[in-house]
Figure (cartoon, rainbow, N blue to C red):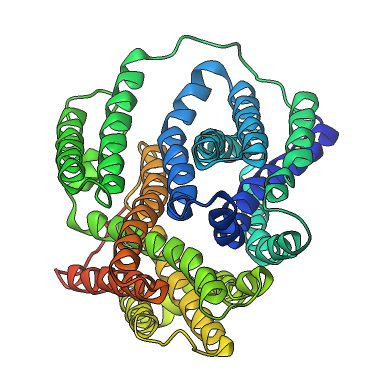
Length: 452
């Protein structure tokens, strides 16, 4: 690949990351407007749950498919799915169509991001990869700063439908660049059917489990039954992985207590993060009666401090130790969520901004340390599998938590007829996650195995 094509490929990869990052953040400012516009409160949590769940299911299998069918085909296929889902979201006139379109969007995103990292690894030297990874991560920071504000401004002048059309020109541009700049080095091959069967089992178990969680709010007995079936299916899947020659999950590492502790932190901290990002803007709009722009800006301090904490976490850990820093970040997050669960609806806007800042630093530090420590368990033979599992934990944590918190909020609002009671319960339940993690981390010192 010549330098010109490599330069265009960098542009395409950055824009692809920015597209998925914007879609994950700009919808936060629109949840209240969408719920009102469609007259369906249930879409508030499902907007995120459907997108994240579809992304989580597609992410681990995309890498395996790309090895057989080619990265270009998977990348363009993911972009086309994302484009179709995006246009369908913008045209949706009812909740069913919108949520179905979000599933298509999420599936597309689940194919895009693995291909971004795979193409960086294939087309660039080891020295260049680090710079490109940093550049791509900055796209998430840019989206977290710009998307909420931009979303608020669009909602003030247009309908929520236009939020989804924002990405369409960028998607088309990335498709054109990839067509010109990259060619697969080898032709398509047959896919390993054993791997596909493994992913089919994993997908079925996760789908049944999430359906059960979602059903708890309306049909508790059916929801509990589905949860039991889903958990049973996942346990069976984990046991069969031990007999697979090419297991798609790091079953051996899951027997290590420390690995389970750190991946539990990844799952639950990311779940807390999405809950905060959804319900704090809703608080600003429904209790403080401020604009969608103000709701988006309420997340700005959190985004800034999240980026800062991720940058300085390793330096702080070198001074105080990784485990003490992780525990301190969890205690800080626990304190903020407990405060949010008790504050009156008339809490000043500046106070919410202050809590947003503290929580951004807490969650950013916790996520960064947990991911670094979990990755230390990987070696050259299972790095891809471990990285995929960490990504799966992060996405599933967000998916399961936004669904569960949505059920809790709806139940409390129906019981008390006040939205603030629903927000209080959401933040109290999130605080409970941090109590669990702090107690879980006390069960011995989670230390990765030594590497020679």
